Every structure is written in structure tokens, then in C-alpha cells.
Image (tube, rainbow, N blue to C red):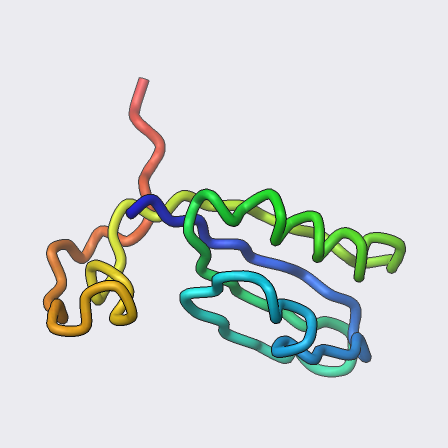
Length: 105
């Protein structure tokens, strides 16, 4: 399954209700990292086909706020390899190389 990892920078004090914000989106993982009062970082792991709708939702909600920034990454591997919802018995990792590195040259 092709995945996308979104790293979202939000201004401090942004209200986050992830369950409501993404109730119609297929999120495989979410992580929240508060960096003091001035910045919050949100990480979202989504199937590649959910990238555009998820980005659109984030831009609609936070796009007008100073400090909003979104970085889109394409993970090469994930652990567990696939979502437990799709394959509940598949739990092993295939690679420790989580993010694709730029090719030399």
C-alpha cells in the first residue's frame, strides 16, 4: 500500500479536534508534538489516495493562520507493513529504512 506522511506545522494555540476534523478520512496514524506555546507539529499517515482530500481539509481549516506549513513525505516502508485493519495478522517489519533518501548524483 502506498503511503504518505504529512508533517503539519501549526501555530501555538491551534484548536485540534482530530476526530471531528478527519471523521470522513482514512487516517492510518496520527501523532501530535507540542513545541511550547508557539508551535504544534501534527503528523498524519494516510493512504496515498487520501492525500489530496486530507491536504484540502488541512488547508481549509488552518490555511489562513500565520505559521501553517505542510510537508508531504513518501515513506518507503512502514511497520507494521500494512494497516492492521486490512491485514490483522501481519505484524512484522520488512525494513528499517522508513523514509526514501534522495539519490546521489
